[in-house]
Amino acid sequence: MAHVTFRQVFRRTDDHTPGTPKVKLVREDLPLPLHPTAVLIKVHAVSLNYRDANIANGGNPWPVIPHGVPGNDAAGEIIAVGERVSLVSIGDRVAPITDTEFVSARSTGRSWLAANEDGTLATHLVFDEKLVTKIPTHLDWVQASIIPCAGTTAWSALKGVSIGQTVLIQGTGGVATFALKLARASGLKIFLTSSSDEKLNKIKDQFGKPEIQTINYRTQPDWHKEVLRLTNGIGVDLVVENGGSSSLVQSMLCTRRGGTVSQVGYLGGPKPEQLKEFVSTVIDRRVNIRGINGGSKHDQDDLMAAISATEMTFEDIIDSVWPFEKSEEAIEFVWQGKQIGKVILNFGQ
Image (cartoon, rainbow, N blue to C red):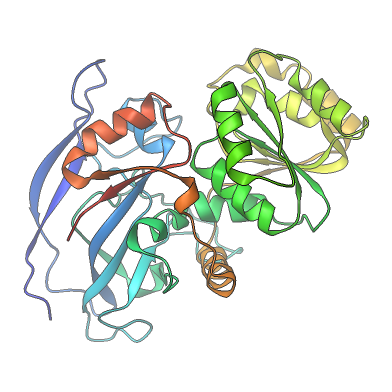
């Protein structure tokens, strides 16, 4: 049993005034002794998501616990286990799931890390053994840390498409770039939107041939028409929809009849006036809209297995790596939307 009794952890200040610190570093006792089926994880890396910055700045559309710990993603090493743990062992490299109530497709509850309960931005974590998955052995801590939230969300969003089909991916953040990796590995034809030509060109250069079709939605506000033009008026088979109410109808309009829109985000904010044509469009296009709230424990296990089998790596979709002590600055960097890909906090342990 490891002789660790406390942890360092960043908690939200819940002061949403611009320019004020959004997190504060504190020291806390660990919940010891461990529950019989619990494991103690020494964290090596945490990956930030937009929702971490959004919650820290008071923008989350759902209630959150006060002064909670940010972070959905983490990769670490098990250093102690409860007396009845049988699924994992000391020394195993693991990542927790992002929704501790979403174990299988039949699960009906929801408890998101960093929202309904404390998240992962801490030196040590305690989880039940059933809520962690083993991470691929070929990945370093930084790369492994991006899998639980961005990876499993992208994996779930792309379900149902097959080689040769078309996908529209919105943005260049964590979920979008992970979806790009999976879509390219799956043999899909990719369309990508962003408001930045610089980001679009960087992605095109980075991913090479076959060339990704890119559209700047700021300079082409009717971007859905451009998607239709590029698909000979048919539309794409699936959209990884990240804007929410501000872009959903346009996404439906450029999805082929009978296609799928995977709603993964709400970056555009609440704009109900842009949903006036929702009902007529969903009927006309026969579009299947599915809400993606990460993925289940089973989904995360499946993704880990796929990454291990293909030995996929993710250094090309990591924007920057920050020390744990710079968590405040890293969260602000994500809030400003400066990244292309994932922003990681490395604990350097």
